[in-house]
Length: 462
Image (tube, one colour):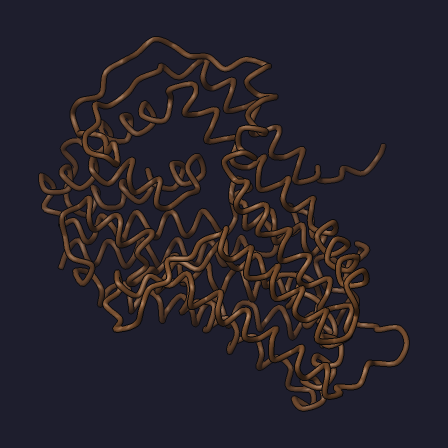
């Protein structure tokens, strides 16, 4: 009997597409009345509509429609790949990594807490999540060279930013949008969210460092030890020297990422006295394309060699771009089948008449499956908070705590769900099967779940 092998990310996503399509034949179709430019649903206005079952053709088209919807993200990934292709061609990354490892002198594990806290600050302040896709191909080989496996590199980025998003303090794309719909200020509930951020950051850093120490001391205990790795700690040939040209390349490389981070931070929304650029994926794609060309020309690679390196680097990430498109198809099918509002309505009915503690815990539990079906935090906030917040008033629960339940559930699910493009894309970068990620992270997810339940229950009583 052949040993079972976990399906690829594409197969998992297509299975989910089929299951969601099947659900549109079973779950009654319905819709809320909506108001305003954002088309926010109005609580208590749900009504059945004509069934819109999704067939085989809809399933086949969903991934393409999802790709059209996610084309800005996919192109961003290709531009990052091209940029990194040029940088890697110069040898600057290999030389820089070798120099960092030499300077750390066996203490490379210190990179884990430093980088995770930085990513967490980005996640909690401006929702740094999809933007982290640019860091996976950079950091996975760094940790591989230091003697760890691909899971460590993935976890540093995904758990770092993901924990910050889970405990979003002033994240305008989750907390900010939800606060607007709930009619509360961004500062309400801030102390609770800061405490959650500190506690969960500490738990995530401890979790990743414990695994990293085990893998470095006993490589055979790695959860991906039996799999061929895209990046290996063993580097063939002589390591390039960190000469003057490569130092310039690393400076431009660093400045590019700093500009990216600055460009997407909505300083106006978080009250910082700095100009907001308002960049998103088109501007970021142009940034990485221009930086790649500049690096190639400064290094003296010439026009043809620079373009060849850029195209080759982009080609390496085409698979990641496809995964992002397919994952967006799930929401397309739900909306086409008119079952999104029905699922939300069921949650509305389940909350009716519950006490304060029971209510807030039910809100959290309802948001968990909703976050799987609608992985976009801003989309989920727009759809659900206008309904959940008024219900909370009858249970004695303020809008700020509703927001905390929403963002905690959304953030937790997005660490593990196969419908999250960042999860599947990050795993694709490191050639890590989805089942290995689940085996790696399930204990931390359980810890986060129990911590959140405790925080919400205590806050509901106070």
